Length: 482
Image 1 (cartoon, rainbow, N blue to C red):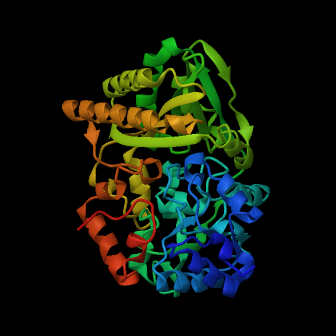
Image 2 (tube, rainbow, N blue to C red):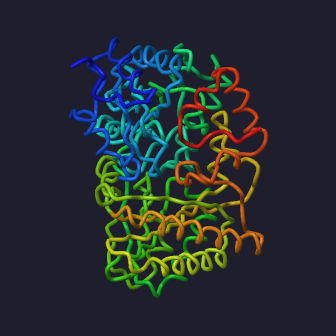
Image 3 (spheres, rainbow, N blue to C red):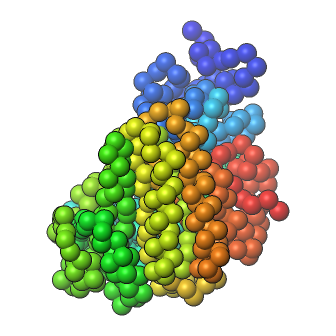
């Protein structure tokens, strides 16, 4: 069989590009009837992302593989997607229909420098690769909170971590990015070389190039105090009051973090409140969590010492559902949080007959101290330095299994978020910023970074991607229109 024929469909301009790629890197190309292709598509975080059918999957093993492939793809004006961990849930961000999906999963090396001050991480690594390497050395990177999430997507979207109040966003802990540009050129972007690209990659997502290696600063870290406190639903006001106070005081307790979530599962419709807590300094004796610990009754309290490998494994949800996120940000305020809670519960009602549905929403602290730490490390393009307020990062997640429920669940998410944003605007507690890694495809998070940062990203894109390859041929959250 002639190489590539299996993928060719009449009128499909992409399939010949698969054949062209295979001529120079045969072992890295897989087609729909081959195991590598099926493995790639079946291992997305969300089955929605895996529902698209690329003409082939390319799995580069080296930076040079990626550079060679880039020239072929751009020459043929081929639509392609770039997948690191494949965590973005909506279809079209990390996969493509009838194009080429680049799966970086073969580039998962984690290398610690001899002085243990730096860690080089491959562009396709997941956080489990990082933590399982670093835990035995009592080292870490301020990185992802779920082991299966990809290093690349999380970092390029900013990245929340258990260490944010100490070291800023995950992207603020990168010393150097190795990047393949649309020309096929490989550059290193850091504070001394290509500094404009360096800054643009700290929150700018996949808009300028493909990062094949991240060089992170390492941090000394032993066991952490971590676990969940589960209360009864009738303690909601106490939980939210305690959360507001916790957020106000994070600058005094920068090693502590919280994710306060509420989930409703069908069948049953029972609300489960759970507060996932981590203190990276276990010697504090959980002082920052006193407000949460005081809330009774507790159905469960699993706080205990553990390492990051195990902690991040506990946050993996049930496997491969269809999954959608939507997000917003508002000021740290009890009345706002209470009303957002009520609106989110009401948003479940139109879809409460859908079986095997999990409707979850959660609050995370986003205090000013995180931005201060970012600025101390050189800053990023996220734009949160425009406010001095302590904020709350809010997210709603719909997880389900049937394609027939795609439209009603997407509609419920968007309508619920619209009511929340209308409410926060009406009481003056809204904030425009949207976290890219939680944003639905229609939310345009980069447009909320502020005009100066958007213009910085546009300039970098014009300089390093003059043909607009990553705007025209690649999916994901794109730059705002001029």
